[in-house]
Image (cartoon, rainbow, N blue to C red; front, side, top):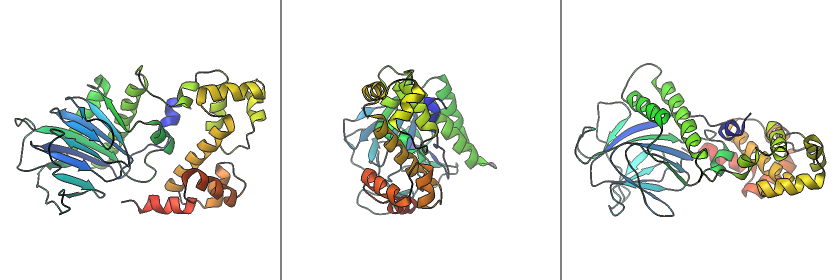
Length: 321
């Protein structure tokens, strides 16, 4: 599997939330639903996005923004506009004071309008296409670790523009299989957006992703990624790479930022976290799949890394709306 495929492995939309929203000024929507990943394509207008930390960013028509959860963020016509709508898990729309907000009926499918009925071409209105990965196991842990809190792809390339247009058209259709089509289109849009990011000169891609091009470290990373449950040792990895233990340790640490065994442990915990969310396998089964001899040893390692036991991690993930 190539590094890009590894990064995206396990990312798959399920029970898709895709919404076309038409917003009339003044407007400000704060999202507090804790979703692990949001994609927003600007179909019309020049809205602002205000992350929970950092400066507000102005978007242009055609831009795609990706927000990594669970931190909240705000979309607005102006950063100074008071928050009018708060999106809670569900999604549930409320006023800033906490009162339930009645939704404006719209004959279109997957469309929400703030205030009075508007058309896409109405003066001053912004039209956004929102795709949300919200359920456990929809986004792989290692992908979330790799992404910045806010990623903006300016005026998307031809492929992404075509995908956005197709996704927008699908939101207003009401035909058999619509949800499945939306899921697959959202997945392809995610792939295209990440490709755009990773090929940019200023992309802060994870160190292990960049290190895959090294003939020694890349071969070791592929071994770890392909079979994290194998009882790897530094000696065994060095033999497979055809170098000494000291050479591998030095080279791996220089390129990846940590020694091989520390990286292996972190990767195993990431894989285990995804397995806990995606499957009903017992703790002992998950432990064996990621290279631990017992559920007890795995639970201790998992708690050191994540601060909670595997059981509590799974229960918390499955309890999310």
